[in-house]
Amino acid sequence: MRIFPKRRAPLHFLCALALILPPRAAQADQKIDDALKLATGFLVSQQKPQGMIGDQFPMPNTALAVLALAACGHQPGEATPEGQAMRKAIDYVLLPDNQTADGYFGKVDNSRMYGHGITTLMLAEMLGMGLDEKQDALIRQKCKLGVELILRAQGMRKDPQNSGGWQYEPDSRGSDLSVTCWQTMALRAAQNAGIDVPREAVDKVVGYMKRLYKPVGETRGPTVPGGFGYSSPATTISTTAEGLLAMQVCGQYQADEVLSASELLFPLDLKNEKQWFYYTTYYYAQGMYQRGGKHADTAQRMVPATLLPLQSREGWWQSVGGEEAGPGKTYCTSLAILALAVKNHFLPIYQR
Image (cartoon, rainbow, N blue to C red; front, side):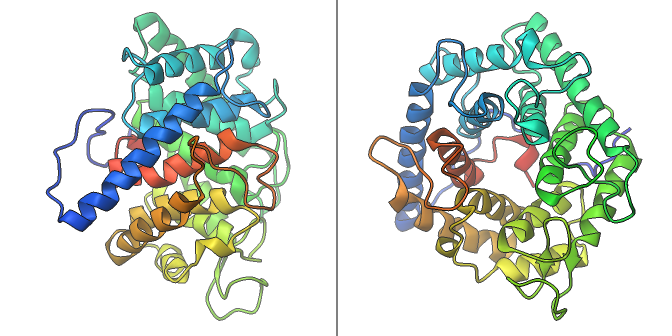
């Protein structure tokens, strides 16, 4: 049974028909493609012999790198450095010691439910892309276990405010929007891939996110005049961008919260978001693309204009301040790629 609303068939990595662009637009598009090629080359260069990409939190960093390579049209079966890197990275994630018997991916590197949601999302997006039937079966098995853990964690007894969401550990009694967004996207991608997701789980997470929303005009929250909060309606730009994407992933395209959040983000200057710059840019790019129209057009101009000047000659992006120095260049680079590659429409989870 399909719980999330039906969307157009996933493109995966089939070649899209080329668009006829005016010269200036074609030139801008080529600059983005050149930046993405340089960035994917950097990610490949950072792979360790064991297959992991990145140092701190290797499970989610490796999973994000695989998603970034996939968003640029690469497949694990192709005979290219990118394809080979994806194969090694997936093999690393699938190692027996990287998932506990009850399905948890967040224990081995202490990346907790953040790592679990990101890793499960990646495996769901890679279903059907394995080198052979044996690897595809293993991807499905581990992804299904990951989904089952997400659903069990959501079912923990919580107070009314936190019910329906997720937090740092599977047995957490609280919830926050950041962890919840990754689990939501993992569930959506899994259902796209044919894994069962109960309707009740989606209804609960939508209810949780709506409780974190502050309507425009209310006085709660220090940063913006409305939008989504982290664990209460004390809103920020980053959490408003998160909520915008996650609500649409749940099919709430015309919900009042989505329409209002997209308007709040419309005049956003991404350069001001120092603490979680790449995280905010990623959610902003994807969420505004889902919104479509003037919102997508504005984001499609703003994201490259903001990110391209920050890319190094070697292809990487690094923290501009705040909390993103710890996860490192591979983390920042993967999120930058995912933000810039919205135009490709290759990853099913991010298609309209």
